[in-house]
Structures are given as C-alpha cells and as structure tokens.
Image 1: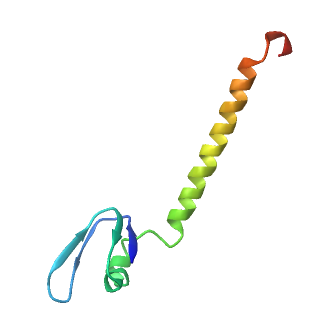
Image 2 (image 1 turned 90 degrees about the vertical axis):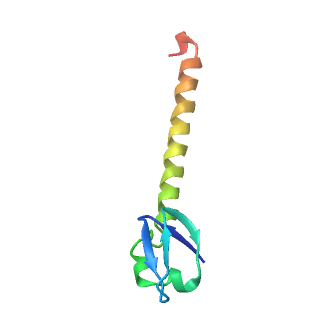
Length: 80
C-alpha cells in the first residue's frame, strides 16, 4: 500500500524496531498504513488530488493568459 507522508515521523513496531519515514510517497505494509500514528502524519484523503487539480487549473490559466498577451503583442499597431 502507498502512503503520502506530509510530516516526517518514526514508527516503533511491536517488536521494538523503529522505522523512519520522510516526506513523500512510501510503499508500506497494510499494518503500517493503517496504524493510528502513521495516519497522523499523512495527507488527508483526496488532498493530494485536490492540490494537483488546483495546480493544473493555475497552469492552464497562466498558459491561456500568456497566449492572449502574445497575440495582443503580435497584432499590428493600427489594429489596437
């Protein structure tokens, strides 16, 4: 299972061993992904997709405005 860690943490397993997880995506066993302490350090469900959607929207808007500005600059002076 994959998890998206937004705050680094160290998980102590039942056998006493510790595993550190840094910010980013990690492949982990289900038992680690479902642990209450792990969940405190993860992105909210859907948060990553929401942010990615917002970024795409901003990029699309910027690209559109850039094309419009370029077209206005390329227009003949008497047409302005």
